[in-house]
Length: 369
Ligand code: NAD
Ligand code: GLY
Image (cartoon, rainbow, N blue to C red):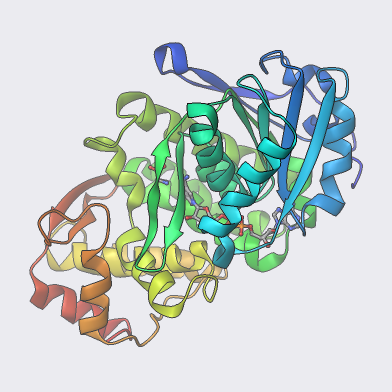
């Protein structure tokens, strides 16, 4: 594991959900500091769930850091990739828990990106009807979005994230030093979810991302720290008001209706989740423009920023009918009607249906039809 220069005291953002509240700690080198895990409940055993890529870099360090807290700590390596976010892989977690005699207090640690985090969270929600878990996100995407807020899931061949549960972790620990080993394509994918917070919630943050996109792409530590912190603050504000997505939380799915169709239409793992979201945001912005929420200049601004983040803005050619069919399976659909998260003015989003004719126009314009 790369050594951090120093373990500065972490920044803290709180998720406020009554008795399900928890801290998000953000800083470089946290993973090697036992005191950062004081929010973890006491137990005899722990299971670190990770994957074949992340494990050789970080699992031993985490195991060592946690050694004083548990009598036994096992490590489970799952196969890597979105294509493995499925039942057979999830079952490997239950196999390990049962084989190791895990009890109701056993703590699960999700060490990895959003795929490991979503699956470990779902396993924690289900094993013995719920055991504690901790998110240790190691991708930018997971640090700014997926580890926070308690959405857990696996994919179904017919739809993305269709099987899952809302289940909050006890702690989220974002070690910024882990971003040093992230492949460039994954860094870009994470930036999609950072950019997302601007159009839907905070245009001042959007201005900041525009001004700092080169520093973010160059992994400037101060820029990454600010991006992670502000993203977590916004997510905490939204989730704190609407944990189970009965309304406001849906805005966090900006770009995801088109994006999920790209992911499942191409086959999971072909485009990264963040790449699909990046392109999906451009498509959703174009739909917003057609419905009068934003002007062409705004769409161009977003498109340019998505491109500067190294993300695609031309949609894969799946055909308009296929897109419409895939988007009807989205969780936001009601009675077969697709509902999109659209920008009603810069910095503010709403969820609403859109006429098929306009969706087809967007698909044709973006290359998808
Ligand atoms: P990922 O988990 O597949 O990780 C990306 C790749 O980076 C993997 O190959 C992984 O092994 C590798 N990796 C992880 N950390 C690394 C590190 N520090 N150094 C080197 N390699 C590293 O993908 P992701 O982008 O983190 O997450 C995407 C998933 O998150 C999707 O399944 C998406 O649906 C989900 N998601 C969930 C939520 C939520 O609220 N639960 C929100 C957004 C996305
Ligand atoms: N990433 C969307 C959400 O957490 O609601």
